[in-house]
Length: 180
Image (cartoon, rainbow, N blue to C red):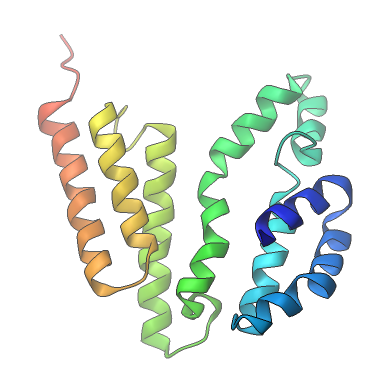
């Protein structure tokens, strides 16, 4: 619900104003249900920023389309597609506040590396390209690998790495388009 509220606020006002209103109105409610203060504010801030590429208003996307003389709607939807992984990052804060630097050095390094690889794999799955154009089956497996790596935990990290290797192997050895 917070994501929807902040995204709608951000569509009609600057990012700073959307964050300020969200911080004043929504953050206390999140804190009352047990969300740490830093996590609540970073969640609100992230979606205030992302509202600039979210259709139907998509201020940043429409401005970019105007500068490039492109179609505003196509530009807006491409921005959302390319930024799909960034829509998941704020939810990662709830599962692992370690991503916000709260934990030991090695915990922070471990979670940051696996989350970064997960976001990269999700971008590969949405764009359909890893080391070459991906077939549908490896794309789906790669998306599952990305979600597993983004979700903190040793078991999910190992599952994500296994799925990523499986997706690569399937694409490389089974689904690869043979060139003449």
